[in-house]
Length: 305
Image 1 (spheres, helix red, strand yellow):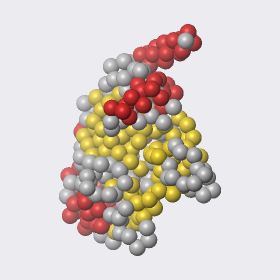
Image 2 (tube, rainbow, N blue to C red; image 1 turned 180 degrees about the vertical axis):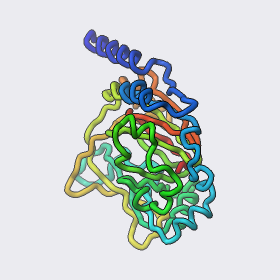
Image 3 (cartoon, rainbow, N blue to C red; image 1 turned 135 degrees about the vertical axis):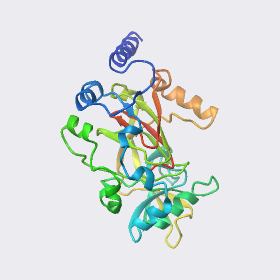
């Protein structure tokens, strides 16, 4: 008990020295100078939210709110759409039942379908309804903006100058994600410096600093993937299959938003370091704003591009 008390005190002191205890993310009225960004945020592993001044002059801010424009520019372009039953791609779910397999959780990845952009946009909108058995989310990674969406490249700047100068490099990957009100990213740890620019809609972030990574209870889970039966369209029901041969994935065990009081009680009992520890940082990133982070956390996405 004494060792745990000292550990809690140490992590509290480290957090207070670097990030403070308010649970609020710094909001900047204008982009910081490269020196200030490096000194106050990158070196301190501290998130910051930059106002709409950060994207002033980006054509995307005015153009991308028009679906007709996007359909015209991306006409004939195939994009990757991720399908899940609940909107949470890459998340922990109960493992599929099968004889001889222990019960528990698995790490479930989305089913992925390539389709024309116009069809993808319509599907994302349609599966925002709670009655839809699937949720479509265009959340391909691996530099998808400069690959699948390259026709839109002229609508945004190739890099964010104050960040590029501070970090000493150009972006290694640029991704574009399109979701609806049911799109959500589960609690996880990123391994890169991140700049999130929201063009339309908004994103809700729940964040922990890197010093709090122990509060995620990262454990290994068997990998699984959602599968859409052959011959079914992308709005059909999905089923979950464990990968063969078995592959283990390290992932955060905590669900910060349990849906029922019973689930909350179970989470609090299983993961006291998270639920009894310092309050996570929260912020909502609105259209035109940019969030910098090198933290661990989750993102709830609302129709964000």
